[in-house]
Image (cartoon, rainbow, N blue to C red; front, side):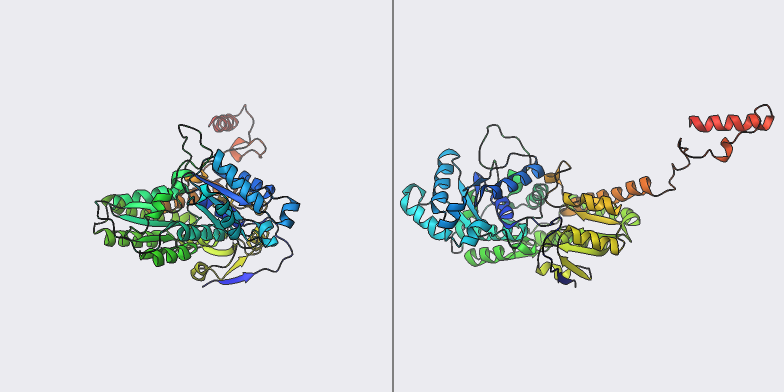
Length: 481
C-alpha cells in the first residue's frame, strides 16, 4: 500500500496535470454531434484547444462564452445565452456540454439557474440536451473533470427507472471507460466484447469520434461517438463495465437509475486483469472464451518471459493521472520493475493498491528530483517529461495526455492481452536501444571510429618485412569490414 504525500509548494514547476474543464470537454467529445462549451475567458478554451489539436492531430470542436472582465464581475448569463443560441443555430449540434472554469466558479455564478431561465426564454430549447458540469480549473485534474462529466451525462440523459433486458441475439453491455483509455483502447475493447456476442455501448466513445478517420463531409461538431438516444437506452443492458476508479460514481449512478449492475476494473493492462475480464465476459455471455484470446494470452505470457531479461530490475520513475499510474505501474511491477518515484495529480482509492512505498501529489520537477536521488533508469510520463529525461540521461517512454511530439497517440493500445503485449515490447525495445547506444561494449563495439586510437592489429611494422606486410593487410581488411 502506497502512502500519499502532499507537497506544500508555492507553485508548480513543469506541471504534470491538466485542468478539470479539459477533462470534461474531452468526455463530451465522445458523444455524437456534440459541442463542448467552456463557460469562461477565451484564453481558457484556446489553451485547451491547442493541447487537443497537438495531441490528436485532428480538428477539435470546442467553443467558449468568451467572458470579459466586466461580464465576470456582473455575471455571465447573457454570454452563456448568446453562445448557446449561436452554436445551436450555426453548428446544429445534437447536444451541448457546458463546463465551468475558474472565472465563473470564482464569481459564484448560478449556471444551473441561468440554464433554466434560458430555456424559459427560448421555447425551442425545451427538450434540447444542455448538460452542465461544474469544473473549476483551480482544483483537481483532467481525470476528475472526466469523471464528473460522465456522472452528469448519466444523471441528465439516462431515464430514471429499470428497463427490460434486451431480448435479442446481441445483448447490450455498457462500458464506462476512464480518461486514461485512448481511442485505440476503446476499439480494442469493442472488438473483445463483440467477439463474446455483446452489443457494447461506450460512454463516452472516443473510439468513434477521435480515432483519426476522415469524414465524407465537414461537420463543426464531433464526427462520431455515442448518440443521445443510445445513452437513453443504457438501462437496457445486462451489465456495466467501469474501467478505472474514476468511473465508480458514474457506474453507481447508472445502477441506481436503471438497476443495471456494474463491475469495476481498476485497470485492464496486464495478465491478471485480462484473465478476470475474460472470466466475467464468459460467465455473463454464457460462451467459452474464443480461441483467439487463448492464443493471445499465450503470446502475452511468452512476451513477458522474453522481455523480463531487459525490463526486470529497472528502477522506474512514473508520473501520470491516478488510474493510469496504477494500471501501468502495477503491470510493470509484475515484470520485476521497482517503482522508486511515483508522482500523480491527486488522491484516489486506486493508489492504495499501488505497489510502491509512496506516491507524491506534485509536478514533473518533483518527479525529476526523486528520479535523480533514487537512481531511476526509466522515466514514463507524457511529452512534457522529455526535458527531464534528457537531463537525467535515462530512457523516456511517452504515455498519457498530452503526447504532441510523436504520432499515433490516439491509437496507442495498452488494454487486453494484445495491447499489454505490445506495450511490453515497446518498453523493452526502448531499453535495448538505449543500451546499444549508451552502454558499451556491444556486439558492434569492436568497430573502429575515426576519433579512436588504432587497435593493436592496425599498428604496422616495417612494410618491407614479412610481419609488417601481414599487419598491413590485416589493417586494410578491418577497415573494409
